Figure 1: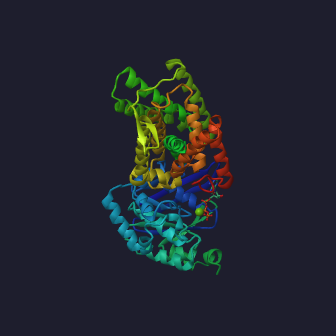
Figure 2: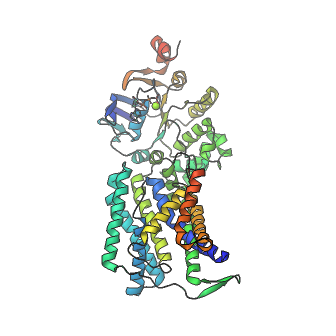
Length: 233
Length: 285
Ligand SMILES: Nc1ncnc2c1ncn2[C@@H]1O[C@H](COP(=O)(O)OP(=O)(O)OP(=O)(O)O)[C@@H](O)[C@H]1O
Ligand SMILES: [Mg+2]
């Protein structure tokens, strides 16, 4: 479904990604792991159309999306839950979700989508008239995920779901995502390696802008090097 | 005297608010200060004068056409002058400043230095609660200004266009991720900002005739209102506009007419001393 082939990405003058290639099949859950500054967010940005790659190619469902603007990539069926959540702080929860449905702008689709999001995260229903900025961190993350789901993406990109959240909340949100319909393919970036590996089928490991390892999540979880480097075991 | 000064303050305050809305919208979305704002106001005044007086058009049609033309002109200015400067706010400041000078000189060449005044909409005066007689044209300006403001707020609150305007001014990158073509939105909102200046222009021109440089104080006042209300805050424009209108007129009535504009600046300095980000502004802005 998603094929990233040999992309190079720059931020300003500095190259941050070197020759990255990865593949995600429809329905798969794939994790990207790596320490701070490894380039995980840059990779997400490149896929979402925020950071156009200088070389290489990104294909989605057989069409080339690299070189397209972010607002066009969204229309292909890719939604990004960005690092730091970035909810619209002065808009209500409802309006935040409506913005997620901007691509279709059909009231009926938006109402349906909102019901599905409320079913997934019931607390958002209670908070629907509250401004996004008044929610707790966990609720904001739910809102950010809900907003992304409003566009009915076929590929959901999630950057640092667990950042700054209590373990209990992180677990709750991961459980909700695991319950998503199988059509939604998920590519997630995590620093919480254990959480990421137990909620994905495959994973890629990044180090200073390059992919250094990849494999099945179970295999990586059992790998001694990985356990030592990332799980502190 | 208090009643009539307050009334003047409210009428002029509403027009200040309307004109400031256009500036604030563009600041909020594009982070661009349009120095030629006042010249767009004047342009609409000249157009409504031309269409109504020289071409004998119906007044409402003349005003609508004037606003529409200024809107399109605004779109063109964004496309040709502002868009290439994205990412460098200083360039757009300098370019719109040059544009304002060029327009002032063009007006001088075409219309001469004399004041031009489109015909009034209504005649006579109305007795206000037995307190004083007030010109009907000014009352009509108050009603029209209020209607345009209500229309703008309804649009911002209730339509998709308003929703993406608010989303984009809060987080441009996120709005783009949600599918908003922010380049196109920039152009539309710049045009809308100019159209709001134009609306203020056609409403006020029958009261205060237009001259080639009459736009300068208009723009300055709009900037004061925007800073007073808080950069990019639309509610702040309303409160800021009314405050400024009232302070100027009450000050002129009780203290001295000569210092009318000074009172506005004093209020501005006082407010900024207490709340550096303006009445409704955000801390970081
Ligand atoms: N806005 C920016 N401008 C320039 N360089 C940046 C910018 N953001 C990140 N970088 C650099 O790009 C590299 C990759 O950063 P990126 O944010 O993609 O890493 P990451 O793996 O997501 O890190 P983290 O775990 O901290 O989120 C880093 O060296 C970082 O310093
Ligand atoms: Mg990151």
